Image 1 (cartoon, rainbow, N blue to C red):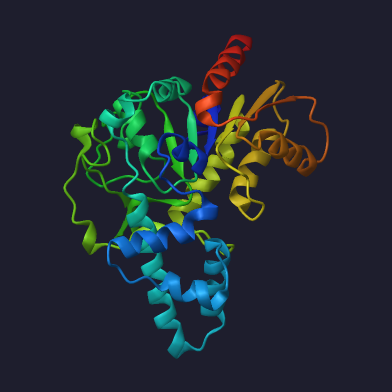
Image 2 (spheres, rainbow, N blue to C red):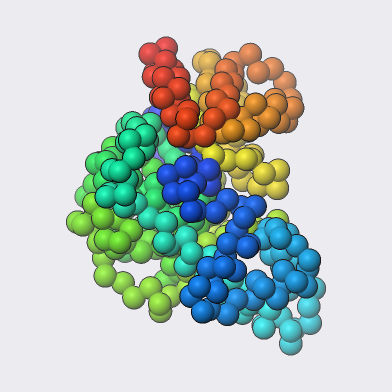
Amino acid sequence: MPESSYKKVNNLFLIGAGFTKAVLPEAPLNKDLLEELIKYCETKNIETPLKKYKQEYKTDDIEILLTRLDLEIAGSRPNNTKSLEVERATIERQIAARFMTFVFNEERFNKNKWPCNLAKLFSDKDAIVSLNYDCFLEGLLGCSGLWDPTGYAHVKHPSFKPENPNPRNILVYKIHGSSNFRIFQKVIIPIIDDAIFPCSEECVIPFNSNETPLYIIAPSFVKIPHVQIADMINKAIKVANYAKNMVIGGCSLRPEDSSVWLIITSFIKKELPTTKNLIIIDPDANNIKDRIVSYWVGSTQHLNICPIPKTFQDGIEELLEKLNNCERKK
């Protein structure tokens, strides 16, 4: 992507699990994920290594569990490493399978009034960094006529042609992978079917996903991305520097997620003669604001931080108003 393309970015969104939770209450947050996955596997009569490791490591936190498992793999003897890696891959498949069920459903979406405003958040040339494995956001954008799967940043299907449209030049950066990402001949490609993208029929590509490894970065303190995802993160960091406005939504900014903090750093640092606006929508927004201010070294006079201590349901109108005010001030 040429330098001129980075400079044309409009708003930057950092979207976490709270976004999906707002529209799909059954979707788990990180703190509930371990127990929820175990229950999900039980309902499907699927054996899961998570039960064993929950008892062995004495934790209800999936991030601690998988970090302990990653450290055990790193320190194990070669003859034990393979079996541990197989169990680790099994857990990843089960996480992806669970989040594959959280997709955009137009009928259910239309039953609620407030989600209709979600699509109004996004406009031409926005960049969206999603930390979520599910594809609800992409389905929403597609059915709103704002996006299609050619708009994944740095993850393309080989059948896409250069002339394939991304209607509004909105790019989605899924820096933790996605339940519909698969590795085919060492390259990450998106699985595109009408269950995930009900309004993007022209992009649907038949594909046997059972024959290829999935790609997500499971919640662990140890995160080693595939080279495509590493490059995607680099591009998101670069784009952040040129964005005038940033919205952090439903994301707790976990301190160990260094990629997220690098993106925030790039957005905050002052290299352009302009005022930037950082809007935080989350029930814990004031605390998140304090953590960002405490993290930063130097002047923040160029930065307006606007916390909205509400869920997406309760704060969507206020968020839209603040974004519209930012647009008018340009």
